Amino acid sequence: MLQGILPVERARVPADIAAGVTLAALGIPEVMGYANIAGMPVITGLYTIVLPIAVFALLGSSRHLVVGADSATAAIMAAGLAGMAPVASPQYVELAGMLAIITGVILILARIVRLGFLADFLSRSVLIGFLTGVGIQVAMGQLAGMLGVPEPSGSTIRKFVDTLGEIPDTNTTTLLVSLSVLAVILGCRKINRRIPGALIAVVGAIFVSWNWDLAADGVSTLGKVPSGLPSLGVPSVTWTEFEALLATAGAIFLVILAQSAATSRAYAAKYGESFDENIDLDGLSAANLAAGLSGTFVVNGSPTKTQMVDGAGGKSQLASMTTAVIVVVVLLFLTKPLQYMPNAVLASVVFLIGIELVDVAGMRGILRVRLDEFAIACGTALIVICVGVEQGIVVAVVVSVIDHLRRGYHPHDAVLVRRSSGGFKAVDVAPGVATVPGLVVYRFTASLYYANATRFHEEILELVDSASPKARWLCIDCTAIADVDYSGERTIRDLHAELAGRGVQLKLVEVLGDVRAQLDRYGITELVGPAAYFDETSDAVEAFATDHGTDESTP
Image (cartoon, rainbow, N blue to C red; front, side, top):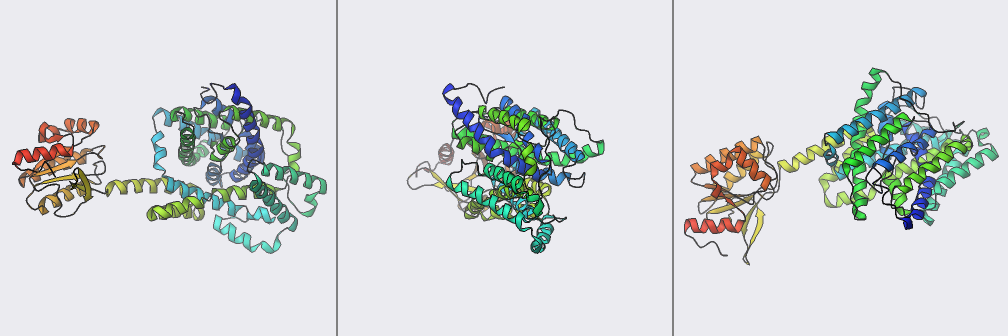
């Protein structure tokens, strides 16, 4: 507890407080936009940076991670709750609250059973593709609000196409409001990203709407916004609704796990600080429980808010606590003017949020180095856009796991051969390649398990059968083998027997301690004999030379 705040450096307190003020100025319009993405009342966006942000600041271990509403989790939530209740209705809010509580419980269960490793199954390329797809989907969905035309129903693509068909019915005043908001935000960013362009645009639009009565020109406005702090209570849902929320909570859990851990790691590495992923899971769990009990929706570790604080000079969770205090003041005294805010303002803010999620630089980077991973990222983005966010996250996880299995199934194996200058180098596996005449040192570059055991077996026999002169020893370089499962153990036994039938001895070199313990337990050590293990390749080559009376111990 308080790891993100203590120790307090007095000299840094003013900078942390200033960063908290900056986060409030930049974050308030942002979380209102996220509430819009989630289909929630706008005021609930502010609720996400009251209790949830403060709870994580107190309980988390990261000094930098800022927790609050997030575009990806908001989009997943909106997709999961679609059809269960009217958007922004009291029942919808109840469902959103229960979803946050379920997510919080899953996070704490993950902490107890140590499921934090699941975050690693969302590869960076897949996550870039997923967030890019979410960004495109979010941006496309705001077009109707920016034009002032009725929002069509149906899939994202259908809504977008139908909205394009309604362009002739655009409300000119609404469009001018949207363009003005975009101009103010982008203009401020060009001057200095610390300028709260979104806040300036929101305040300016509220003033113009109130002073010139934009509603009379057909511009839809937010309407009355409740003031005061969020009320506490357990959301009321039926058992059937509870069961229907589980799948969505699971998808949100994976995104929170991956995104929060990645953000915390990045900033901890940047400042040479330590953080505990398990303690952060406690904090994220408590933050979501607080969200569910205070009438708002799921929260996540936010890269954008974290960057806002870091860019403003904040170096501890004192900045988040400052933001929470400021938002409390806003909720108590400043919500009345929000009723005059045009909905087009929120649509424009959300549109820019979506555009920022489209990681063009990341996609180009993937394309430059890995065409296969680029195809996976594009496929993930397309599924999010064309099918849905929930389906996209499921596909993202499945594709990441398949990609992982593909790499393990088809590793880049090698044979170690002598360098003319001494030592050894790895060359591609090919018929006839040997380390020295009569000895083949084969490096397998993955854990040995059921999916790649057959390849392992076949490659070794092909090397032995094609060796000229005849192979006497086959030595497995185990440097990269971190685990051997039951199928791998049976394969080694079968291989030992087949090699013995060919007059070839099986040896092992550079076996990791854990793997050696496995092989001892499996009875492999007893089968091949303790003398079959060597610490280094050079030891095996020297032993082979001594055993066969050759002079292969020197290049």
